[in-house]
Image (cartoon, rainbow, N blue to C red; front, side):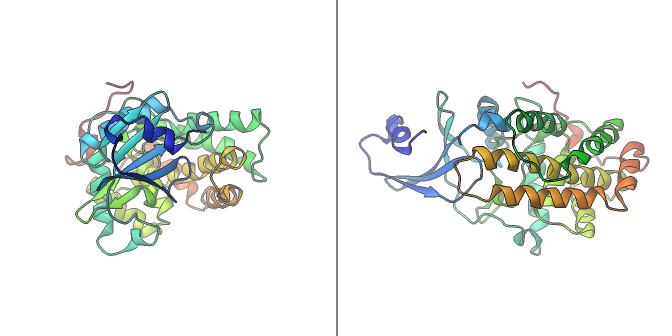
Length: 320
């Protein structure tokens, strides 16, 4: 295990200064510390155990963190220890969001602005595919004999149908966060900042929107509002894409939680989280609207992206 004391000893600028480290109750993948050096605060992110099982590539996370900071939405990277995959980041003062705060008046435009700022920013070092991530997680679960919620097997052919529907009329990929939880937004008092790029990569922008809807527990009318705010217009096919990605985020999160239950050193009820996400996914797959979402995503007869869409500068897969 990497100790915070060992990290501090590796930072030349911190030697001979007053340094104190405080663990932070933030994040379900890494161990995070606030480190105060004299009167300046930083965040130190130490990778959790067996993060490779979660398909996290430290080099991609590092490079995409730099790109997000350049876009003006991510935290600035101060130090990087590549042999430990440890990042030292600027400390952003302010509260993190939570599912309830996502519903406060005026918050949705701020969330959309931050996400669009990221999507229109410098290209990311890699691509991210939620379906291939699902395949990798499933292989890990089976290889290590991990436990999934009862009935999860029915999701596999449904996930294939979702993938085929989304591939029929794809959107150009943009730099995506791919884990847009409310807790990854920090309100600095002026704007929302978006942190933690472990799962980032060029992807369909609707994947990030699906995460927002899922983690913010959006009602159907709020999904429509989000799509209208992001794309500049309402659209049945674009809303359908968001609903399908919302379903997929729950299917993948179920697997992620099952892996974390067996491997994580963080104290958290990952088994309960796996069950919760599975129930959400099952409710969406059993929804009367599910067939309509598949049809609308495949046909996309009403889709016409506005000139202000961030997809105007698509990211070519494969990095810089």
